[in-house]
Length: 389
Image (tube, rainbow, N blue to C red; front, side):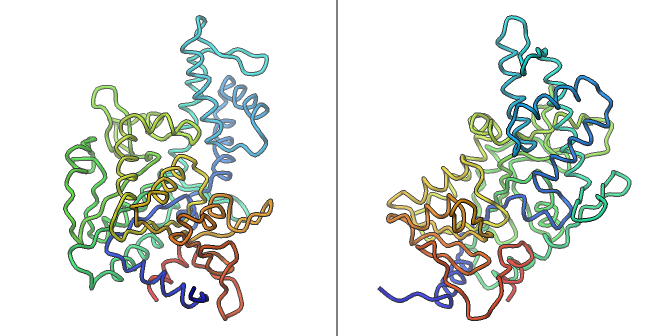
């Protein structure tokens, strides 16, 4: 077997980044520097908003939930637990559910759920940063969300592919609720196909939109696997992609985002059934195909299951490249999921992890570069520089 070193495997990464069929999977990490908080700062901010609302019942239920859930619970766990309680209350004769020693009606639980959704929507839309010092809080009048890094990334990706033929196809998948990716694509004059027809107000029309499997260098497919802050479920109009600041479609608590623990159920329903079918199909390829991740920590078991299923298929030729910082807790080298995949005898040779220490390939021992110091390609801006250079 040919001896592998950092440079030879790095060259393989470069070759995969030139693949005509690329699928990108993004997580919360790519929007952190844009002043959109990661999960735990977002949890802190939502708690502040709930407490500032002076809604005594919401505050009471939120505090009891905090005592019942694990100390490491974040806002998606709160929503998941609330969702379960609402389901129980719907089935009960009293239309209520118990938390600890207290009993709450379906309406009370639903009110807190919607208040949390609204708080998430406002925070992600306008920004919140707790990166040392006093927190920066964005508002409708003074938003603090930045888009420069997303634009630079899009420019780098498309510039790097300028010499490829019209067979080239890019597909983006994201677990993020924000709109930075599609906004950057639009500003760079790339047509985004996201399942909606219409203009800035769009209606969900996936059978028509996603069926247009036309490969064109100025078009890309975007699948928002966990929903979006500009998706709203309207009782009369159905699912629409809307705008903030209008008198109509103004109920922010009706935006369509879902907590992680309940996503397996939700992915069986529209719109998520279409989105996950698109993800599954993108990974099922008998031709050279690559899935590249950044900002995604492999914490969503449903997404991981889809990736593992694709990698395990004998006829599949999809390669996974994860740009990710190592998590060395509990003896892990990269993280629990990637450690397992990197050492898998059936498909480990189609898995790469690009971390701070080097490249992990078919092993949990990194191939280190000659230069000293940590690599920064696991960060969104570091990845952009890697692609550009």
